[in-house]
Image (cartoon, rainbow, N blue to C red; front, top):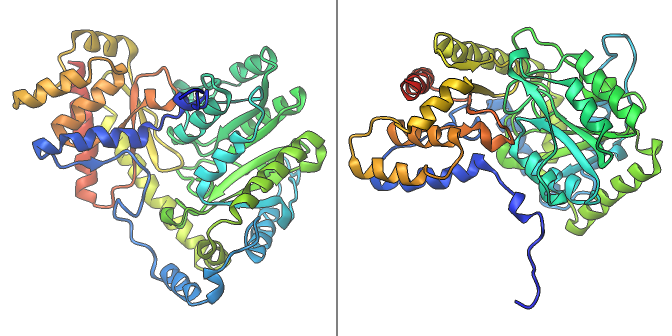
Length: 442
């Protein structure tokens, strides 16, 4: 073509969580059954949807309005319900009440993937958002793609329960004036960390001192366990501009609904932030609106008297599974797994020295089929070191996990889920991954 039509950030769009599926499917010629531990879909992993939730959805589907457009911002009654719910989260630990919002401060999207694409896509290219490492791929890739450069990151420290290194955050903000915002994920994906309120307040302090806005992915806000305590961004943000991203995908769970929303805080506190938020709404107007049915179901589901017990039951399930995963790796030398305290995942990190030695030797894992072994060696020749382990694990067990290098991280390790509903299969998954990791390091 006479002109280059490729966006300068196109090569930054990486989503290892799904990209590894293509490799797994290539193993079909050897008839290897795949156990998908790469993606957080509770339903696909066997979790049944509560009957009372199904009945609400069934009833709403009989309403003709569920087949119509909603307002661009989202269904008015649902936005009003969510605003009232946000405003009753209560005071923070120090007794201060958080930011209050109105229905106009909520904007619906077709899932948080749509929200993330717009939140980053309508920033000025020169305006960077500092995010965590490891980072959820959708967020890190979107930020990198909008700028055309590598995603800017601060360190999550596995030695401190995967909590953010706040000194690293502040230094990067202080010495890089292109940073306009800070991204945090709480509870965190991929690590399962839950941020104490004091940590959240540090983010707010830094944002206020340096004139930044905050984005907090709160997808897993109601999946917290193991005695962890935290706060919503709205409870601690004060007068700092900010956006919280929420969804029904993992909480109901209803991932196929593709239904998420943004809560916007203090938009009037800065005219440039307000103009930016208006651009997000203008972008949604070009699409008319987001999908109607799941929006219309939200007040009935979340407002149901059974919903709090539903959340408590699910949190208890994931707490027990986090204990199982932690126990499976507790005696494995050369690997650290910090027990998750929120969300649906666990991340294991290889000891850098031992893993480098094993990777240099390139022994891989024993495979009887010479053609398969040759195929894996060819495929792993030019990939990240932890991805090599993931490929060998796939070829020998069919278990598909995600390398930590796929989460904008320089740590070698992998992420797997806490989602398998079959107790026996879940125990086999954790035990097998641990055993193969030991064999790989031998």
